[in-house]
Length: 311
Image 1 (cartoon, rainbow, N blue to C red):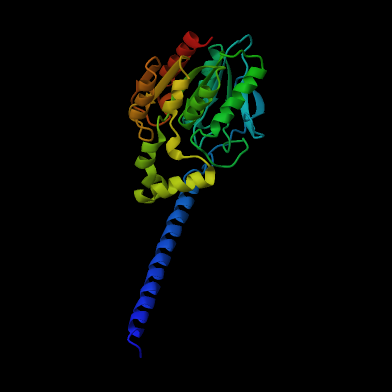
Image 2: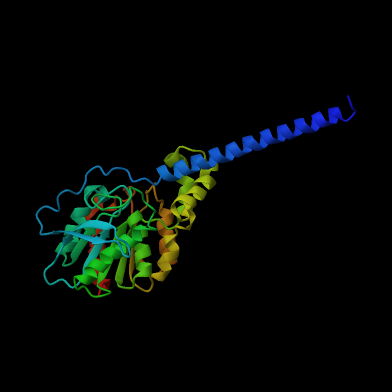
């Protein structure tokens, strides 16, 4: 046996050990990204609505309507409450895992009726993937849903409403969608935000473990796989930045001081970004439940704002 034989065996053994380590690392990376992809998929799926909007608002004249998201052949379903002689209209936009029947803890229709009785035509509809609207059962925190809001505005413009005479009220994710739509479309004359996030990134950190069941060190993997699978960065969801493009149009910001899903600091960040906006904060409620718990005060705030600010 040559003197070099032990060295050769040692080098071969070292290479085998190295490949084993590399293989294990690759398996860990694949597993990490696979779990990230699974989580990115599961945490953005729309949960089945507890009650589909099969029938419209009782005791008031309404029309079942359908239209498409702006720039897309995606059918959206809604109810239109026309008001004789009204020159102004309001679009109501629900949040995730809800629809035009169930939003605001089932009081969305009640709000629509109050706004209608105050002299406005009202359009409330189901966002993509929710209720009776078409689309994948997935939400994007307003990234794609803004096109649904723009489709609703386009439909009202086709009914003869003038640019600037249309207001949009969005709750929760609907508020983020409405903000994105208003930033793009100057025909939206006023914006009302209820329980709306300002910046998604800190909410991901705060809610990730509860929403996904995974430890926080999976966050980078989920963010990466969300970009790969769905084409947008969750950390780029910042309605607070888009709100700047809405100025100088009037904005009303409403938030519950006890909101645990989208904390009060998020609402305050929106108000700080637009000091000229009107802000109304109220306690004794939870996320997207301000109207359900304080209906009279909520309706007074909204209708007064519309009366004073919508052309």
